[in-house]
Length: 231
Image (cartoon, rainbow, N blue to C red; front, side):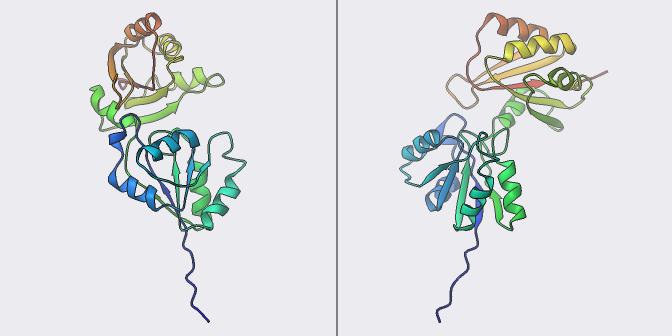
């Protein structure tokens, strides 16, 4: 009777470039080439990335809209393969992108989980903001409606540097609300298009930035940083 090796499945989270395609690591490229299956936030975006690097792989959708519905099925597919990959459209999966539920479910199922180091927008934004980076909090995206004011006001006496993600069509509204619910003279930094051609840093008080982005349309992905509260 032949000896059969038991498949030991593994899920690897692979960060993808947030702007410049040169930001992808050699290790990430190797693992994408070796993968049995890839789960992607948007299969079209991921297929473009794979085509650029001449990688041909089966890509299945795993995004915020189907995360709960297909969680059990996705774990089952991972168990049937040796190496499965999860990628988001840009950056590290699980950081304000789908991933947490799948990682937790895989751990509970006894599946090995690994995450490669790689691009994520808030780290370069923090380091280049000029604000203290020894202690900080990452708040992700603010609630759109319910709990928004409470969440912002809770940051009023936070002494660590605060990092948030925001969409370009809401940044003006967010800054105006922060002027209303926080100290409008609080120092802030709006970082646009990290790692892309038009990467920009706008520094000033919340009042100054609110005025600027009310008068100028914002484009691209945005990281918003607030300096920590000081007496």
